[in-house]
Length: 317
Image 1 (cartoon, rainbow, N blue to C red):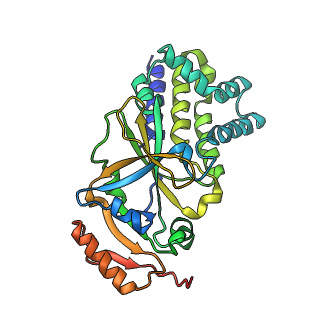
Image 2 (image 1 turned 135 degrees about the horizontal axis):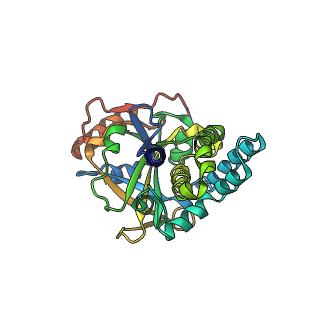
């Protein structure tokens, strides 16, 4: 009985560990690159307003769809090395289906099914993207070059953003995470978790099957939008992942500038999350641009002294 209790407590503990609200977050600030037109829409007088794009409309077409493939590869490598049995392997590669079947039957010993429901069932995922690089030529190139490098990099306090949103539904969840670009890193994390539960599964797969399935289900759903194709590594990205309940009232907007409608939502944060701002590399008059940006911040009630800087990138055109 004591051993069973310890095993079940361990499963709950790992679900908490692998679904934390802040994942791999170094540094103090996040930076958001934006056009001059969008600056006024972000730094409002009474709050900060950030745009979250629906997960299936981001610029990386592989967002959210490669995680199960990487997990299966990790399982296959362990099976090929005879580190896991064929029975455990079959369980792992079908773990999301097994978890959902058990969820619908309300099976399990330890995992509160409300965790699965509140975090991952019946949710729409939206993301707001940042960079740890506050003055990066590739980022200026991609996000504001259409404005001839006229734009801004807004730096936000990670701590203040992590304290939550001004308003949000009770069934919504926001997670801050650093993106993982090295697929082998995720494979190693997967292998470690797989091997940890190998013995427990082999002892009595029926007794712990539902709970272990829930654990891996949560693990895969959580990392779904944290692992990204290494082609985007130059972005050095951090992101806020918002899981919004489908039944919750939410104003959905549409951006038509890309040639097709892109759904997004607007999420408010406290003004204290603002830290500083960097002006893009090519303003026509750097001194005037800095002076007017300081005036704009002050007029909106943001600290402006020593909070506005010019890019140090010596690009000519």
